Image (tube, rainbow, N blue to C red; front, side, top):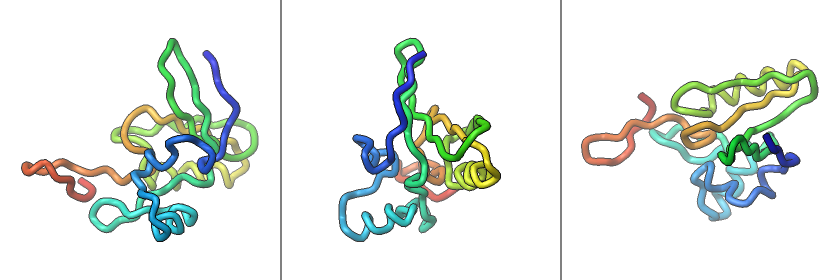
Length: 126
């Protein structure tokens, strides 16, 4: 298993892809504040206060979001992935004095889950 050194979200190529944010100044300000427009008027989390590590396991590379100081805690998100609610818990763990590792296994990091409608568009949280 290979890991790379952590990088900040701002310096990670494709960091905006994980939030779905465009590059407009208004969205850039919201991203710096840690939120972007999400489904159903709810605000997604840009995960700006976590560093990102790329982990390679048998040729499959995944991102792990990391914040805090030791000892380590691994927070495994459930379906549909790293939502703002999962990140709120991760911040509580970090603020309690731990290093929290949140692996990105599926879904769009920092986004509230959406449900596809019959027309193919996305609706708000299920």
